[in-house]
Image 1 (spheres, rainbow, N blue to C red):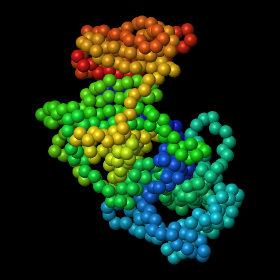
Image 2 (image 1 turned 60 degrees about the vertical axis):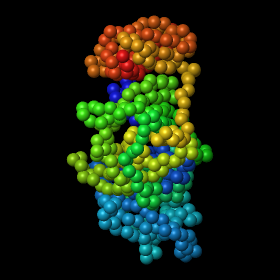
Image 3 (image 1 turned 60 degrees about the horizontal axis):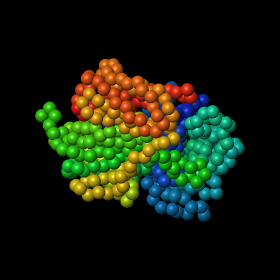
Length: 488
């Protein structure tokens, strides 16, 4: 797939989510569970650190938000010789407005989940390690309870599910499957509950943990940045998952983007900051040659591409917002991250879509995460002061890969490719706007590094072009897609 025609500070990684619709609320549960088990922090236990919950209805395959809830843990207390955690819930549609609060007591002692209200009366009580039908209490009603294991695996083909302590367990009334609790035993967390009319679910993931940290500490941050020429940051993306045995987070380097502030300029009578952007992809071995990126700045904020970031003091925001498509979710918080000894603030936003949004208070370069890909700031140079550690490119030698594409001089583009075999090679330079090929070359490769010069009188200065590379030999064939911006 060709690269985007304009440089942005984000990447997207698709992931397959499997859902079923055998019961009225099952779609909602699986969407939640498959999502939050896809990424996390340093260990699996931190999946349950979020104290943010969504309340919603799900009828006729339509999900509608009705409110939000936060949880504040208060203290441990002993009730009937069992240790309970006392906590307060706050229900609202807008965090800045009126909230309805309630007190509860919760325990997971001796494999029994028990929730008491403020009067110490039982709201829920079940044995969450029991895989057979049992008598228990859900929403203050004693009833017969049946168990269903929820399969959150998203790879195919799948064998029969062998439940573990990590497998979410849905306990529901035998005579009404729409009244249920979903518990994850190893996290000791009630992640979804439904009373048959609406459900409440815990929002889990790094971004919700960050927003939780923000409202617990009342963090705020201003986007009125102060940088000087030569300042820069490195945005580093890595894949993240949990080891099935140790439950510790594992990482795979994916790519980085370096953003360096060069100078000021004027665009359409408006101030703009000129940045140099370069990057490297660890998976493909492709190096992105330096390109210019303009950030338009006004008195009220700045634009990066089509995204506008206002100059303001950011703080915790959590609310249900009305849109033309119905009710949507908007969550925001300010937190801090530490990588390579570099502690930096970031503004975290979550909406109803699957993306995770970040704004840096100290540098005008917002970015987005998706799927199991995590973005971190590994290096900063602000006002000339360096912090962190800049990651460097590597070199892939076990498969064919593009090493560099360079606008070397007028009417000429150099393409450097590493081949592990000899092959016939065809390179085409394409105009993104017309989809026409304006320069091409046919050649052969040797084993190792190969340099090819593609010439054309139709190249225009400061324009981005697509680069399509096809190769074949007697054993295999393949292709690469990339882009280049001409300098001459």
